[in-house]
Image (cartoon, rainbow, N blue to C red; front, side):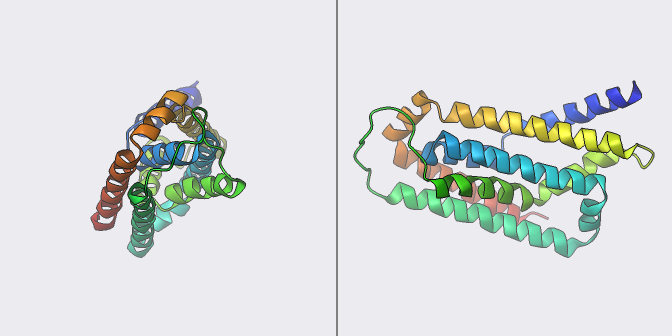
Length: 211
């Protein structure tokens, strides 16, 4: 009974952080609009894998070790910021291209196999290079999972959080790649991609300058 209430509180706190807008939403939006539903779902899978890495690292103390050594956090912060700036560059470059003629009036664009595979790496890299994810997991496990908590409860807590992450981000990927959203994107492509590029650049710079 105690374990059930502990897990419920753990997952409730995780969901509150999960649904907060941030880089994950921006990257999912850009991927869904630019590469289609399949690639966006791949990004969601990559994010869930990254969530699992941070979660299990926190449960078994690896993330806490990283938190105690500032140079590790600095490396992750710089890497994450540069990664977001790279994604911003891709969006702004796409916005500067001339609008291509619409060959297909409806339906989502068919992503190439390479783009689909790259989606997992994009989502995984975004999560793994986000030091705030590590800090969040260390804080969450420190509050809810004490040294006396059985390891099995920690594993169940992380597994449930990973499933919540996968479900939420997959739902966003499907919603953001809906026909109505895709049609609006085709009409407003350059402005949306430029805006997305600015947002991603701002998030990347904020990550680089944050402590």
